[in-house]
Length: 286
Ligand code: PAF
Image (cartoon, rainbow, N blue to C red):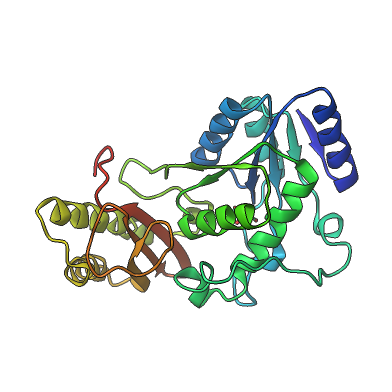
């Protein structure tokens, strides 16, 4: 596996692959790999000849009061894990390489970025789209894989790729969960033992909501009230939002149908966690 740190070298490598008719799949990450990232890499390997994983903690997607400086970083461990997965290139530019000058340009996907996480994280998706657009231009992938845990991010990036005519297959990977249902996230390591014990309440609430839907309850407010009750049983969880939305346009729904997605963001102590699930879909354990 090559570790590439400059944009010019990455770009030259990508062009060389194009010349020899090799296709690239890209997994954009901020590092601190867990099993969820490794699954994205495995999926990417099925989609193209060569996998490029980018590792860049993107400052412009963090708000001033967010965890940019404390965000977990472990380049050596990440490189070893990516190597084991057969990744061709770990693209790990530093901030100076990625943004030699403070960027004056932002890629903004209006509408889809506004609600849910966009409400409490203004500018977050502009930062995500801007860096992902740069990565797409540098790496020139045929496919890019994103996790469904960041559901709104996935929807926003899909739309960006469509609006800007990138011929890139945006591939979604299902949420990877711990045995007790907690969605894997680099931020889970911030949780204290007590907080970690409360965290599976999110998946418990998802399971109850799905059971209610199976039982014929399709009123969104009723479901949300039950989800809220389950989560509020834990004093250390503070709800940021609970919402039932259409899985494509992310508009709020009042009645459940096959396109309804339950999306939530909470704070457990100082840690912000998100989760989501289709309400009709059956998955293992749900
Ligand atoms: O999901 C993430 O890790 C980041 O938002 C991404 C897509 C790598 C952009 O920085």
